[in-house]
Image (cartoon, rainbow, N blue to C red; front, side, top):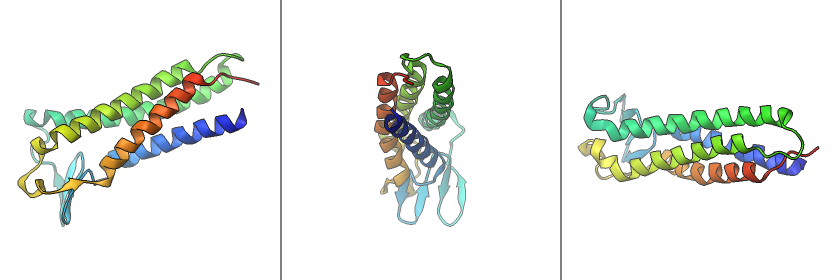
Amino acid sequence: MLIILAFIILFHVISATLLFIATINNAWWVAGNAYTDLWYTCNSSCSAVQNSESHTAGYLQAVQATMILATILSCVGFFVFILQLFRLKQGERFVFTAVIQLLSCLCVMIGASIYAAQHESFQTEEFKDGNYGYSFVLAWIAFPVSLISGLMYLILRKRK
């Protein structure tokens, strides 16, 4: 039981860490020495993503919202798990924690999918010939890790 509990906590912490790095770091799209994330475009200096506050950047705002929500849900899920660890009766499942973690997983998938499909709609010409950066890849890696974590919470029962 202790080994399973350690793996679940490890998966959850890895998931939250990947989400924090992917959301905060500035390498969702890389073109030469210039790179962009969900908020800033950086070359030798950083500036806000062009037209990010306008209605034409709705896709970018959706990615920002879902990635922030995924990170928050993952952190809340961890705290709920710790509370349930001490409050649940023996033999009950961690269903509430699993639902929160699976919602986090869904938000990551939605955000990364929108970014993959619509990244050209909110990028300037200097970024048209770039590639996906490591933050985008970390977001996609966080998706299966949080999915596995959520499924492990569904399967796990509280024991002595």
